[in-house]
Image (tube, rainbow, N blue to C red; front, top):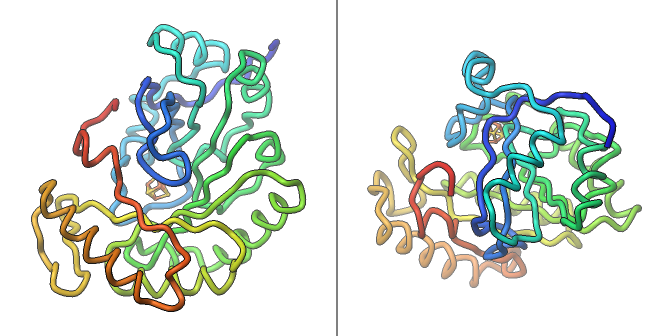
Length: 253
Ligand code: SF4
């Protein structure tokens, strides 16, 4: 690739396991790009969102430099997860070509707010529209229009894609219900949100619960039981955040 475009690289780590969504448990590398058009209340990667922190801690790197750094990590994972922030803010088409040229598969994680044609070149696109607990459904009222357009293009071009909703409270469950209605044929995973300081759970009787592994599993079990008896949501998959179970909120895994 002869491309000197540079991108804010917040971190590259792995090999590790994808902790959420369709690729859960799959060995992979994560490449986290700095910059995001959202400001979710419970964002757990603020260092890749806050513009000042991004400027100070995320150096500008070319695609080749990012690939070289990833290779120094060792391991044999086949998948690369492009995440953020919102990686779709960046022109990553040539970088994806480079990764494919090295025999790697590319998955992208985005909230679905911005379209780039290079999404059509990805092996998998995971869209994670943000529920009411994030505050972003109100802050970005156009989210529905942008998501519809993105899913329509991915479907038309047969790009593997799905939805993943992180659920924190009852309003978030209603948000999932809405998405299930809007996109009845799209695979939808519900991810049990993990509490972070300042963001306790409010799902029924779990209000204020501490963020321990056991408490997290208790919430996951309760959410699963509830959804299995919900006629609208029974076709969703309920998944834990596997990486949180294994490693908590530690960075770099
Ligand atoms: Fe954080 Fe993701 Fe929300 Fe951006 S979209 S603020 S990275 S949780």
